[in-house]
Length: 221
Image (cartoon, rainbow, N blue to C red; front, side, top):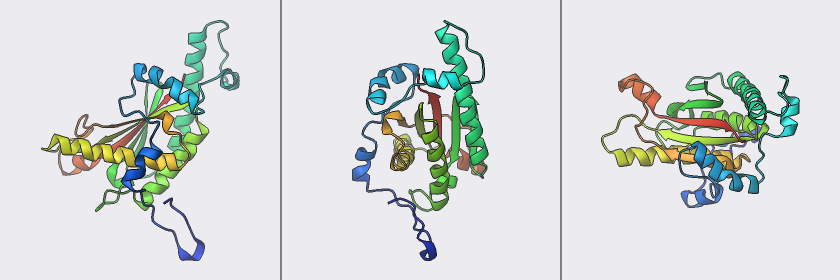
């Protein structure tokens, strides 16, 4: 069920579809880290499902002069400018608590603290989260020549298997939501990393920050 407003009746709360149907929404997603090797291996599936690489048309729209005959230089210029515009759009549209936009080389990373997108006392996406993810989906539809790594994280947990399951559930819920918003699952890499890679101390405040979903966006080329 999508988040829908019905005039005077108010807005219906978003509810993730039944878990048994998630495979339908994520059938072309890759459940692995988005490494360079993985992106190359995924390219046929991505292109076969309507994915677009950064093309000559995109290159012609960039403002910086291209170096004739140097494909590597041209690709790097094109990717840098394309991703810079994407970063600006995300930053301008996501000025809300619990959400941050960062650069990582050419890639752009959106960090979504769990409490910003997931209900506090349930595992499903919150109304606020539906708004945030809807905004991200709108921008990702505009910048379609990109791969997405959706990674879930928990705070430090004694049961590492439980942490992996919880983090993967968060990542998959975000992937399903984006798929419902017309983001092709062929663009997606989905992983649950448990309590790995903390970005804050494991104290009462830091734990809330470490529970998060990161969407890493990389140019498709």
